[in-house]
Image (cartoon, rainbow, N blue to C red; front, top):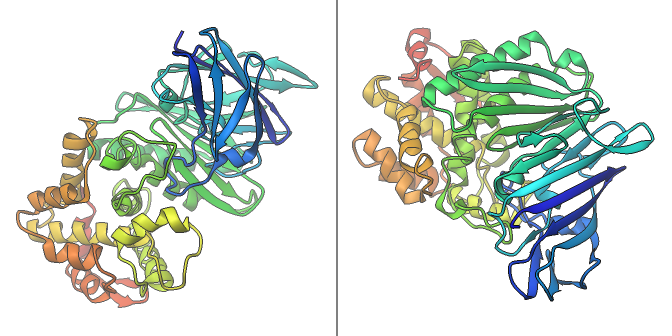
Length: 476
């Protein structure tokens, strides 16, 4: 029996977990807990939320920060038990209180060494009144998860699929379902019903349909937008292959604009990182920091196109889109426009600094400066080919050569692919925009002027020529 079987019992701010499996060989066996999660490229050491790991059959000894060792004396099934403290109320953590259960399996599920490709079964035991009973369709909780469900069990083909599929449960989950190009989509979540408006659902349907047409294919047959409107001010989303989890707050504000922007961004990650992936991330190694210099491709292109899709699909108008574009420029130039690092260096140093403050004037954002690079590439290609080509041709080739073939790319391979679309060398562009800390304001001003936009510095952007700007709202 190769299957890893997990049983999870939630209680207030905690998950009591049992893992049962059959070892494949005798002797010392390492059990690992991931030290990071895809979508956030920094070491987080989830093991800090586990006090101890035990087994009824053999002793378990902690051997390093996120590894435990047990001595296998025969090949009978082994069960290990531990408590995980689920007190991280964001899209990338796990959280349990009296009203909801949110489990990011990558935070809390141990796996045997080299067991990432073993099949998995998960049983979550959810509270009903004062009792604990296994959830059934007629039980007291509603759930949302991309995993296949069989009665009270969820199954994953591999541990990798399991930890890419967050789980949400509550007495009541708002849910909308629709189909686009043969793919089933869900918008499901918690919070005041007013946030799950018909207006929001229609906006999601528009940008979903447009993105599917833009890329020409969708890697999965079902996809879930999972949402928690929380009591405190918050803005966070995490991408997964078959779902995204988004957390926004507080409950009493109008979250529509943030929800459409975050939803569009996270959906495009299904292609750009969940499918089209840098070589260093294929496959994911959850046990160590995975250094790579292309984070700006993952997050920058997704940030730029996520906003552009809202305009191209008709969710927002031209003036609203110009404001979104100006917002990204402002965030870059006001926060770190004079920072010393290049995008290449800052992609690497995320693993050092995390996503908070670093040394003053050191790092640039792979999101906002990365979005500037994506904008620059799109405008360069469009200007040369009078909108007959755009960044779309780059991403279609990336999907064809890397995503569809499950083949990782390097920065140099991305450069070469863009230059193939452009038809000539862009070595000067890479040197200035990506590999240096140049301010870029003059370069941006010249490009934007061609498209009817007047960039006045410090994130100030004005639409001067609607006729020149209008063709920008097209994929080809």
